[in-house]
Image: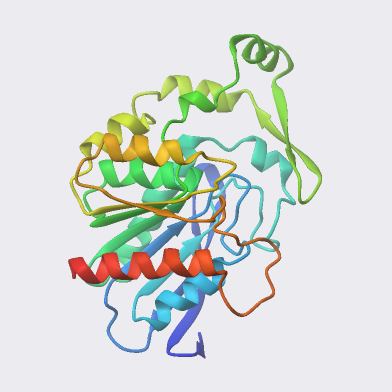
Length: 281
């Protein structure tokens, strides 16, 4: 464990879903933490993407234990946690696996006494949808924040004809524009969704949310339209909604990000989260 700024940092590997490992990094304040934040990356994402380390530093320096991890089947490995060297694992990922991973990480944090005062989930994009589902079914979650979250998994499935082709071929491919990889998604992804449709229903879950809930979305989000934030708010009246002007899907961050200062729009987002947490504490 090495010291940086006003916190200590460490990396941990735990057993994840279906015999794959989860790599976790933890930034813990040197003094008693104000709370614990658990961050969930999105589709084609990973814990060290772009601005995520600076966001982690920000909250750790503000007195929060900040935890982020790679989903077990996100396509990374323990040795190479950035990008997608394991395309087979990427193809075997699904929503249920990510939701189960979340529960396993919370189990670990609870067992090792990493949860201090309260547990807040922050999820970006698809990770926001997983965070909503996790918060609805896990009483250990005390607060919820979504960043550019999806509001419905079912409307992300292809049409009937494409599904039949997917079933026949067993795989469809998703282009990663940055790495230029055609990443596989095996048909098990659709089968798992159909089998667990009720558990994976974000609209159902968000109506059950009773804990403090903050929805943040970029005004110019090109990937998950701002209408989805409005839909989340409509289904959870007590939630707070913040639309950030001029912000895109990643709040104007990108990867690799080699600047030591957050983009203006990301800074607005993290300051909004901090004020939200402080207003509850």
